[in-house]
Length: 117
Image (cartoon, rainbow, N blue to C red):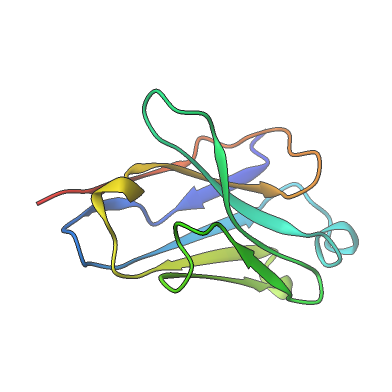
């Protein structure tokens, strides 16, 4: 029973762009809509880190390392969260996950992003 379905990853050259999508498959609308959702990433041999978050009111926060390059958005009708990633750098290589920003659990499989020439 998958809770979060992430997609959109791939191999891209430095400076390229990707758009990640996530559907909160098992969140009901009344729970999803007010929830602050987030994208996380985990690089090899590193701990998972929060990359960006978006509140129910669409306020956003970003990790310093991605500010100005990544944009998080959401579509409540689709119970979906998106991450537009521009000007990608090799340091962005990681598995990307979405989840709630508070008390995240039931992690999905994530989507692999590889930035390499």
